[in-house]
Length: 417
Ligand code: EPU
Image (cartoon, protein in one colour):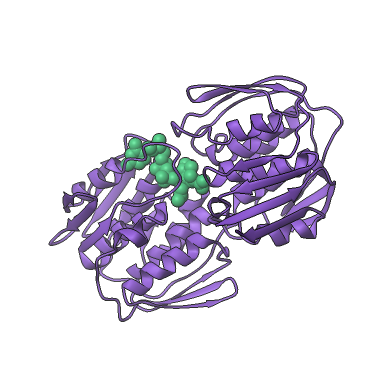
């Protein structure tokens, strides 16, 4: 088990370079098996979810070479195999092997995915879509078997703009016969990134990034190449950190356009923020205004930034309301923040924060990835020492967090216990 120890309340200054987006990389890696060849993915973040997916590729007899942030994935000798529970449960994104293997092999045996405990997380929209394409789906305990003689393109309407289902159905339909139209598709920037990768392999996809995606099936796909887009959630987390303890903290290598829902809120709160072409510079101000936030699908306020944002609301001068609309259980960070001195009351999926609160360090537990990142921000803001347990959750999604924060002046250490 890993523990993070933070000595807080030091101003942070300098530049944090943002890596590739976790939620794009975790789909791009499984998508590689749709091509028969050696595909290249650049700017892959160094996170434990990456390693978990590489292990699954190895189960499927693919060869993977990692050279810093570049992955080369050789799928020429792919052998279909059961993706066992131990590997599948390590992360949510293992379910992208459903769409990708179904597309290439027309047969998949995989256990239900894992991921953060932030809600029920059903996968009915994915399964309904696979069935609409012609797959037969059998569930045996925790195992899914997906099979098809052939997949045939069709119109699929998603009852919710699910990120995962949109990607999985793109993966399953690029090699299907005929045309698939995904209606009410999710519009997240990551989806365009996946589509661009598939297009580089010879897939025909139009409309990714809008709520209607049209895929015209092709017979086969050749090796592809893509650069993972910048991680807007990692960037958003550190931008909020800048508002908490920054002194001209520069968050670099980002697309500010993907962060507008956050940056407009920060401006409303009175932050000292400068938005440049590929970076944002932010400093702590004397007093912040409270605000109300409701998480929404892209381009609304991202649910994944809600938890880090909870820390900033504790420093605003007055009452802020927060409503989470995507996940039922995303308040795991609140008991720890309150233990550190925050005044947050939770009712269902909403919360009320009365600020400003003086946060003080103490021993807390990361319950999930973004809840964990909120505790890191709180620890860096608080006086005294914060000890965060179960740091593994955080390392699933924030690359080199210790190094990146140390470089800008944080006193932070991760140790094995
Ligand atoms: N949903 C269903 N049925 C489905 C699929 C989704 O009811 O078949 C529901 C979910 O339960 C949830 C909502 O629809 O209430 C949204 O789910 P979505 O499918 O969009 O989420 P996801 O694909 O499982 C991805 C990210 C999450 C991020 C959400 C929303 C990955 C690996 N995960 O999850 O990221 O919160 O989109 O933007 O891409 C994180 O990075 O910390 C994280 C949780």
